[in-house]
Image 1 (cartoon, rainbow, N blue to C red):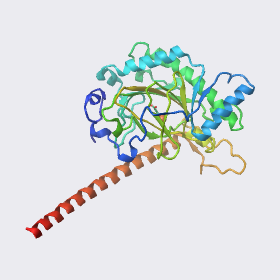
Image 2 (image 1 turned 90 degrees about the vertical axis):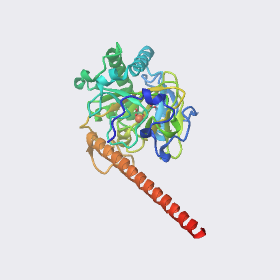
Image 3 (image 1 turned 135 degrees about the vertical axis):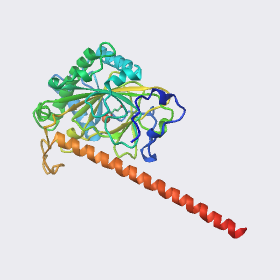
Image 4 (image 1 turned 180 degrees about the vertical axis):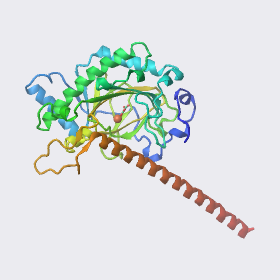
Length: 369
Ligand SMILES: O=C(O)CCC(=O)C(=O)O
Ligand SMILES: [Fe+2]
């Protein structure tokens, strides 16, 4: 296998895109990073803590968005704006460190947490145009501080505070979704057992040929919900028709984009969509996004919490979250393998056709000579 790229800084300076990042035509961006759509609702959470008509109205909007897209944005969410600024500033400072400094926390080889280019998943044929730094914040007892960067100064204090506030927001949103399913407020968080939280900070450098690649390829998040903070550049895209058409989510200052993941989708028996999304890049500026994944514990049961009148379960059997995740990963890898094979076959056929064409031209020349 070709060696892992360890930094994008140099490749970003080149005039053309390194081969490793070039995607097949069907995967390339169809809509520009800054061609914004306002299809994804922006919902104010002011008043969500009180019972009454205001809370009911917020819940109604959230449910409608989950049924339609599996994505919505929230403002007035209660997360401290100074903390958001600090987190964003430190994250940018981290990626601006020299490669050798970031690589002190190199995650390749399956380490849990740290820095890597593209993705921690092995076996991908094409690489994503991004660098990431990731840490596992919950459960607290499982934290491994040896995998948390010690630079820039303040990283640990700020990331801990950020994680705590986002855990609070995540749980508040799970209460709304539980109620919408006709269950007790704490139904979803109880089904998650001890909630896991993983934070992935994505840095997408400027890209020489952004139309040939993706910052992050099309996927659904595996967990319950994801809270995504993005800067004002734009690049998050969503599709509702299996990737035929895309919209670019409008960046809203201080807002979190909330994505429902596979676990949330299954628990609602498919009523809430698992957001199908990707990130595109551009040649004008770099982009930063911070994804906070709220996931169930590995041994949590994945099965619809309630079936509505006349509904059949979308799952054939009861499985654990760990099993669900493993199946998803092996499906994704198998798809990547088949894609690679199909590409190789196509190239061989094209080569053969080219040779045959040359042969018949020669034959014709001889005939005419
Ligand atoms: O950067 C983005 O907008 C998307 C990030 C994302 O989908 C992820 O980290 O799972
Ligand atoms: Fe995602």
